[in-house]
Length: 169
Length: 102
Image 1 (cartoon, each protein chain N blue to C red):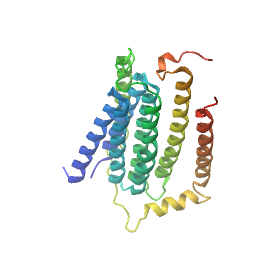
Image 2: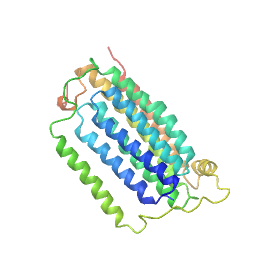
Image 3: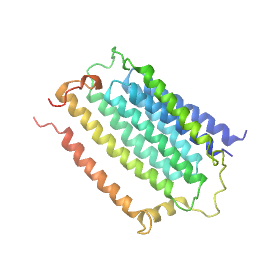
Image 4: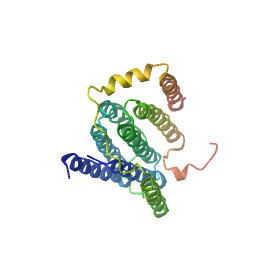
């Protein structure tokens, strides 16, 4: 087992463990903080995949913006931090069954695919992923249209969020 | 080297955990936390397929960035809805929000 594999296993176990804490902790502030841990683990996975820009964006956008937004929302929508009511509904076993079946089904489908245990080819010498990404995102022959549509979507979400959460009284 | 299967299994497990959270949690904010986990699982898959496929076409990373933007939009509107509902009904428990019009 190489060092890279050991690092991957440690990070994967950390990510999955904190993800489990996100869905099972009683205290929602703690759940949001465990989400931050999970997102850090995913950022390390991106770094292992040679996608440095994605790792940075993950930390800036997900941890810096989305997780903090969650913490604010938790604090704005609760009266008592020590919530003693059950946090899961009474059909939790059915939910667990569906989730486990989804996982087993995904793995079963994937392992019948021929490229399942493919190993990565080495990164080509002088290959600059970030400049490639920037060029393709703004090139009319590549992905400029999805890029612009995403900006319109963000504007619509911004206006919609302000309108919905605005206190009319 | 790490085979592609490890990343795919990790993403499938993360997706399963997120799905469990969405199905089981009663608090609407916690349901959105589960949705975030599922979106992250999808992103791991997209970036892994970029790395193990054709690196020169950046399709996987571009898709993942679009998913980032959609996730940010989804969270901002979703949390605004939760806060708005909390103002009117004084609850964020999904089971108790059972009226079509208030």
